[in-house]
Image (cartoon, rainbow, N blue to C red; front, side):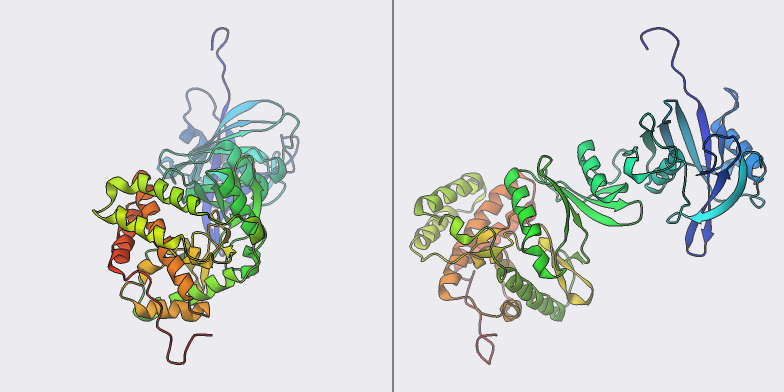
Length: 477
């Protein structure tokens, strides 16, 4: 302070006594009574330090004995969380919440003037009304936070009300990765309620901002901040229009904020297909399901209408390849650039393909494998009306030497590609490979770089996109 009397606040201690109950952990709560503050509300056994001579652990042991009759060994007191609290009346204090799992005795009401009963409750079935300050400490403790702020507004309710809850968790250094900006946290909690955990789920590149969040009631969602307005608009449009038609194979949009470029979506069942270890038969089944999923996506109505999308001109195509080559050139093999330009030169005379709904980034990284072998798809920020081949540009890398997987995919898709589609696919895969080499190098994604190099090598060898061999009965139906 710049002058005057030094600012001080009271310090109080809170007992978080935890036992194993029939349906999970339970915590001991006391019901306040009489003329005490917050009478009629549930609270943790608690009290103030008696003075500068008493430390927090000593105070907790003393208050526990005085209020509950339990005898606690100081060595069994563990730090839970520290909360800087301001009450609705404006008084502030520091609350030290301590976990105890071992004690002697049975809890009983020792101070009937201020407490009329004590009970054990599961963490998911806490009684109401509960003092908001107490609930803030318990929520912060369950979230694993080291410290939290709980500054209530003047005139706010004494009892916990999720609509006006003011809890703010301070992340621990290095815990669960980078945390979102406070305005993103406020937006997400406005949509789904109190969030007790933010876990970084971003790809290993600076432009990815995704968090897996857990609510106070155990619900799980994903929060994503897009890197630009275009990606935000594409993803929200897809989630509002054609993704619901997948019947649970994609997430549901919970909330969107165009100013923050942020969305909250439901979590979808499944583990990442990327990196999954599968048997040959399992791989074949997965790629058949992948074809079915792609077919369902492409069967949906485009949004906006394909007629609103301008065709790609020859100048556009050349400008695009020049941009990709500029970024990737230092990392290309001798002869790669000449090959890429030759592929593009041949492609500019191809008849254009009709446009359909497309995921835009349909690759293994964005696919989840659910129970029973069904698939789920996520990440729609590149969704737009595009030719069907756009969603297959990254799949040929999986078909190298695996005709069984290629056959399974197109069997699930319901038809083979036409010769024109095959020609467009070969071109788009090459352009995507060059783009991947440049982007992956600049953003620290070595897997993307290596995939691009494999695609270029196979394109130069003429083995990139051979037409699938039809099954014995002819074209799959």
